Each structure stands twice: as structure tokens, then as C-alpha cells.
Image (cartoon, rainbow, N blue to C red; front, side, top):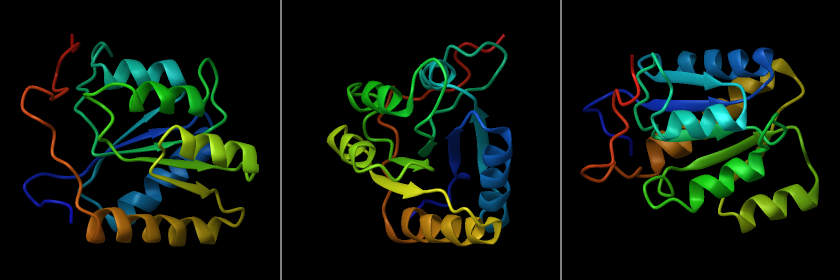
Length: 158
């Protein structure tokens, strides 16, 4: 279960502002105290995770929601970069994408995605998809706490 000592920190990586904001609103509806950051491409995601985003407090997220079709670095490339870094690999990554391609799904799991969810077409189903994700990841699963010395606090803030 998710600890109550601080609010959930969620990173959404999606280049579609409509999808990203819909996802953010759905999470806020179920977890209003969550701290949610949105980045628009793979490079921004990795910069955020490495604490090099200037002027932004870049704390280590508890969960990453990652789209597959991203500019500059696609979701598979971002996932691979996350899961090969010891300081990042324990962060659960949810691939939340419109692709239903068996090849995309298999590759995501080969790269150690924690789960693969296709984006609902119907807007009403978004809230249900997010509620199910939250029920599992925040109420059922136990998330790892950052190891000592692995916080991504205000590093890079200016």
C-alpha cells in the first residue's frame, strides 16, 4: 500500500496535451493530494528523472505513466533507460498507450514494464481505467521507498 507520510508523486509522460490532462484530472479525482508532473517527450522525461530540469522541483516519482509514441525518444527507449539505471529501475512504470500491437506489448514487457494498459477510446472509461490502476498500485501493491541518497529533490532548480 502507498504510504501516507507524503503525497503520491506521479510523472506522466505524454506528448498529447489532451490525453495528459485527462489522465491528470482522472488521477486527481481519485487521489487529490497527489503531486503530478507532466512532460511531453522522452528527453524531458529522462532529464526530469535525472534532476536536470531547471527551475522545476524534480522529486523522484513513485510511479511513471508512460506513453509509447513520443517525440525524440519513444516510450520503449525511455523505459529501457529507466530500467537499466539502478537508481530508477525500482520505480513502477505503467505503459499507457493507444497501441495494441503485440510487438509493442512484448517489447515493453521484455524491457521490464510493470504493466501495459491501452488508452480507452471512450472518455468515460478513462476514469475507470485510472481507478483500476490506482486501486492496484496505491491500495494493493506496496511501492518501494527511495533508497537513501537517491532522492531527486530540488537538484537542478534555479
